[in-house]
Length: 384
Image (cartoon, rainbow, N blue to C red):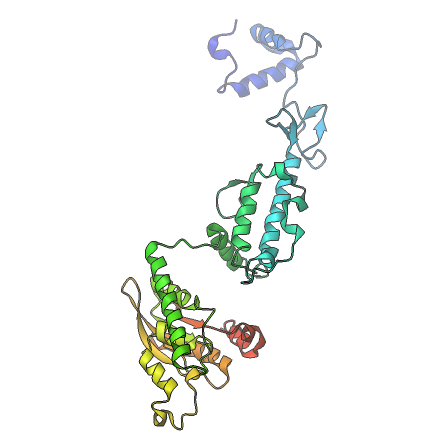
């Protein structure tokens, strides 16, 4: 009989397999007790002897995954919860369709974003529907890999669609898939999909935004009542620019920025001067009333081109120097002026890494794409 420590186990498996191979070649080559043991492994029903190696053929170019060999499956199937057989190829095909759906939201999601303040109906795009990819209502609860979306690694199809709609189809539309730089594109994608394009604000931040909005509205209402009919290029309808700039300055301060240069459009310029840059409203009103006509004699400029500089104190107590540039006669020419001004400041302060300063350019929506100097300014960023 076999001794206990001679029975096949992890430590002597190689020895036993070699012994078994010798037994298959010539039973008399192995001791009698091993010969009896190996004989007990043979199938009494078929009378066939055993074999060495796995019972399936190794996958190769001529035996690809999914094929069968000698009647043995190569492990490319699994049993579903209801007892049916689900092939890995079917699972992979479903995952591929989910990935196509996700990509469609990244490419086309902005087309159905709720950007119209009138709430007019948006066009319908079938490629943003799960049904377009063969999914029904019953499939919405199925779980899929989420490795291509920043967040949990496994999500149901319903959760994946919800995250994509929240990110790209609410009040923010994003068109970014044309970007050739993979690093920049992935940076945007992770930040947007990770937060679903929504920022979590503390109560203090919410109150600060409300205060900024109130300041912006009151300023515009006062100008329209006090200087009835005067050209003011009101910010009315875009008052959210003021809290947006406030939040941008706060975040820039947290990143170590100490200097911000702004190039400003006509519309909302007075509001930004008063509520962001810190120009005294009294001075703005005196300019409206032309109480000092001799002061500006010979300067040949209008109040919508005037600039100002001031110190801005953040909620954390840090101080940032703000400079709103005087506009040249052609409005969009302020862009290279502002960019060049900041670059001069960087050179002056030895900011070789370009981390100390920030340039903010604010355009009218038509000017951004319609004025050649805007594109030319963007092209400056590609120069050494």
